[in-house]
Image 1 (cartoon, helix red, strand yellow):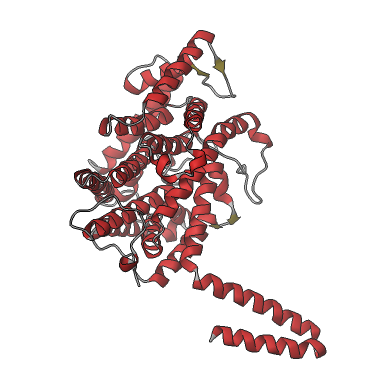
Image 2: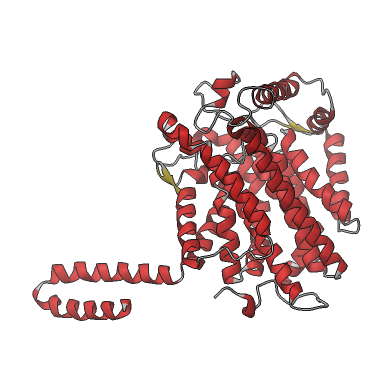
Length: 492
């Protein structure tokens, strides 16, 4: 019917063109717009996933700078969320059949967040909505899982990730250097004082951790084109990873994040390809020590072998550095304060809610413009704002998700399905990197961390569901030729 209406409108434009050319031009423009909207509506699922994918790349490359595309208070993250929800509504179902318990836990987590947000909207207005995204972004998990299962795009997404990998490795260390040296010269988005390029070491570390796991598990051999599988390419990638780690080595969080992900893979898969990275780590550390290399990009900490050693030492004990020990003490004192007024205090059930500036309320504000609103620990944010019930819902959801991935890994190993086993480990290691970095920074509270985390969560749900469906098709499942959902199992 829509196309018939457009045809009639085209005939009308032809008739009006000779008598009323201005009106005919306006009608023609309206027709083009309507045709575009019709096409987008017919392919809304593809458009929504594509929009989310482009946004994830933008957040990974530009960091916080990408977040400010749009007109306040409607930014690109909110646009992607709205389009994704519309697409999911059109699909009509998330399509999860075997992991409904995870969906139930996700629902409980979001309901508790909603309960602790609504009462404060009248008091804190836009601040309440801004703080609530830390749980509201969980809707991306439902969107990504539902649309991936609908379209059968699981393998396509991993292939695109493999293509994005070398470009990120090239860009990440350069972006850190550019930002450190030329922060005041980088143009800002209109209506914002945030630079177009705003990378953070912890954010970059999370993606480096995901790439490290991807390479250690050999998934690049399965999902990259033959011309990108040459031996020297892998040496180059590992070299760029080490360069990226050095560029963010001023902070402890990045080192812990990458180290935890890599160590997890090595422990679960001792025969993974860790020979190259180990050789390059030894070589780089030897060069740093032998040349006494030091580089300061304008901060309080140098990039050097001594700085790396102090960061590692400060993770497990006293480093003797006033700067490092001061930040650690400040964090621990704030976290203790949150535990005191929730677990042992009057905010046990509800927390302080979403909207209040926790740094001001708790007495730990360190920014002159009062821009710090949450503790440098996303888990503590849930405890402080949603109380003990919200914190337990968050922990239960994450534990259930991690356990599901490990159980799927064990099932794939028992079936001698190496591809699915490695994919489960990769998702787990990537997910773990997000949680580790969120333990040291305000990360999940912003779109560059929160949207990425919940999209990965949704991708994991889709992968778990797809694996169960494929294994259910055969009594003796072999390595599948593709990771997409078989046609017979696609949602109608």
